[in-house]
Each structure stands twice: as structure tokens, then as C-alpha cells.
Amino acid sequence: MANKLNELTIFFPFWNEEKNVEKVVNTALLIAPTIAKKFEILVIDDGSTDNTLEVATKLASKQPFVTILSHAQNRGYGAALKEGFANAQYDYIVFTDGDDQFDFSQVTKFVEKIHTADIVIGFRSRRRDNISRHILMYMLRIWDQVLFGFHFKDIDCGFKMFKKSAIEQISPLRSEGAMITTEILAKSKKKKQIIKEVEVDHYPRKFGIQSGGDVYVIVRAVLESFVLWWDIRNGRF
Image (cartoon, rainbow, N blue to C red):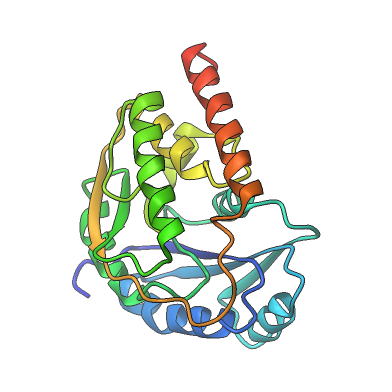
């Protein structure tokens, strides 16, 4: 790749993804040298109760570029992303969800745009999830438009790239759950950061169980969104 990044942190949040973690990390290990001169891969285990941590630890023992970060208990999607941001060493950061529903080779689309943006977010050309996830996505769009005044094609797409400086400018991040993306974009908008979008492919989940439609996850997201709205409204950010 002609315009390789000088350095890049790649991270993946995992929760009970024992059948996906090895493939996801190994794919990144193949792609990373083609897009960055120097890189690291962070595996974020968010308190998995299956063998995700064991599989990842075994993999990392053979790969000097891979580092494991683990939560003793499941804290939530936002907590996993914050762990990745906090431990990223390099000037550019990219993550995808650990469920193997994205083609990591499409990271080149993000690299092409990140030089003229602070954040590059993916939008799925065709979302390969069940109907409840589609409904939640449309509800989130409306929710974010009403509360925070922004609209993106696919707010919760789990494929995003950042300049580290952009994350530092909007930190600390509060959300521990699913509203982490809304928090990032709302704060980024307030700071007048440049956000660009790129189209990515999305594939059906082969292994593991989706948690995004869980009632607890939804209620937690609603509560976190109100806290975020209140903080921004009252100048706490």
C-alpha cells in the first residue's frame, strides 16, 4: 500500500467469542503489515465466560505483536472500547467487533480517508443481522437526531478508525455500554472534529450469540444517553 501509516493500534472487543477470536486476530496479523510500518494488536476480553481468554492467551504467546487485556467481569461494550483507547500506543487507532462479521482487509478504505479526517466510521452496505437489530438501529438514528442533532448512515457499525489525538480531545469517555458510539460522535461534533464515512461489507454471524438486542443492554443504553445529553447540555464536556 503506497500510503502506509507510520504506526497503528488495532484492537478487538471480545465477549464469549471463543470460535471467532483466532480467525479475527490472525486475519489482522496478515493485513497489518500492508497498511502500517509499525503496529500492535490489542485483544480486549470483556469478562468472557467461555474459552475466549484461553484461546487469545495461547495465540498471544506466539505473536509478539499481540497483547491481551482482560476484565475480570463483563462490563459492557463501551468499557471494552475504552480499554482499547486507553491502552493504544500509536497515533492511529482502528477497531472492529470481534464477531467476525467484517472483512478486516477493507481497513484500506479507512486508511485512505483518515489523513483528512479525525474519525472515519463505517456504514454497512447490507446489514446481516436479525430484524430486531435493524429496528434498534433505526430507533438509535432517531434518538440521536432528537437528543444530539446528528445523523449518520450507520451509527453503531463496529468498524471505525481514529486519530489518537481525536480520542484524547473528547476524553474521558463515560459510557460503559452500547451508547459509547453516540457519546464519541456527540462529543466529536461538539469539538467540530471532521468525521467521514466509508461503506463496508457485513457478513452473517457464524458463531456466538448477539447481545445487542438484550433488554438490559437497551435499558442501559437509554439511561446512558440521558446522562450524556445532560452532561453536554450543562457544559460538563
